[in-house]
Length: 465
Ligand code: 6PG
Image 1 (cartoon, rainbow, N blue to C red):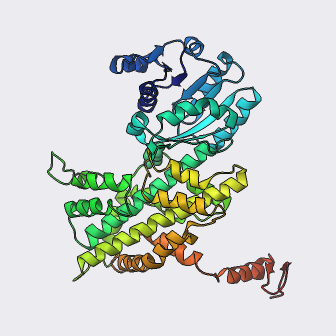
Image 2 (image 1 turned 135 degrees about the vertical axis):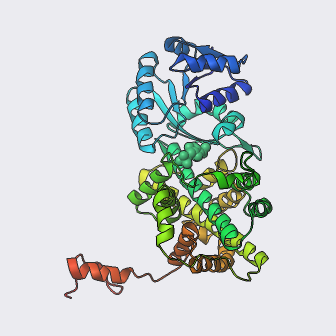
Image 3 (image 1 turned 180 degrees about the vertical axis):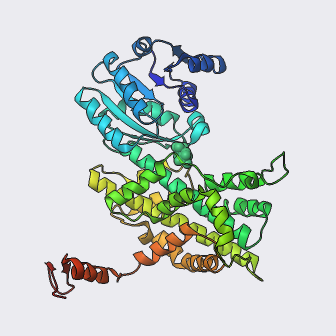
């Protein structure tokens, strides 16, 4: 009998199946079309893997409760696959979905399957092809009892950091896909922040690509250590063989997206939490896509575009490093704040320290900073915002000076630094004991009699303006 079945043999499904098999699990594999199954068998013959061409045979080959891992295109395909599986399953069997599914779909699937006597476990999977094969970060959710059946396999195939798997049970319903969604939002922001640091160094300090690659390699040894920093340094060393230009210079500056960053921002709006840095990064992807318009506007609209004159390069490089780290801290602060609110609003009891531990290995946003984030939430389970943890507070109190200098210089010289700027605006807004919202309340009450609260009395009142 096989311990687990992998449904879907695209690159991610194939690599996850191989990972399971390499860990000693007997794996059944199946794909909706036989061509991928043939190709998989030819390319990856493995003693622990058996391929099936009939869905019924695939299902019958599994130990009970059956564990079926879906790695198919997120969206309606997941529903039709589940529909085809259900008649072949027994009560108590477990369907896992490892795609980038919308957490609301996972909520629905969890309840639908539960009503029918089956278990649904949504599993956020991060780490791309390489991670899937050698150890991804996994974010599972569903019924805790059902999770116990799949935990030995999931925790074995996940990346391991300090002897701990980057996989742990996160909560009910679609909590796992929710955690993965916000992970992707953070990924978008992290990428944009690194890009802004790169643009400042290149277009305002006048450094060349190879100098920046060396700087990023150096930064990656300190506070900014992360997978994205590492790959960006590597990208900047690459040269296009055809043109002998830096590879980054021959790539069209329009960035695509599959939508998970946008979902994260949409959810932040739905929940009423500020997620400005991720949202700016999503908007910058949209803005990048109007290339032709931007090319026209470049000629039509004036700006002070210029290099920094007589700049002390080393001093500015350090300022940009500090600004980048502050941007990263702010992104995590907002992302984890969103987790906290979601946990309360959806009743999931998300453990923020555990989420940070999962992110330490295998996933795209893995970074040194996650140890500190986990410690901060472990030390204070009621911590509302990372900004107020002793470790991050100390850094921010210093690095905000650097961020101001970089943002001001960007503005002065006409370089858009939306995520750096959003990070500083959030910082200044958050540390303002007195906001301007009293005036907004006055305006609302003036034109619409919406009522307001006074500082010296309880309850809502209307002022006769
Ligand atoms: C991961 C990634 C991955 C995501 C890609 C593409 O954690 O492995 O987040 O799940 O799909 O990074 O995302 P975009 O196409 O939206 O940039």
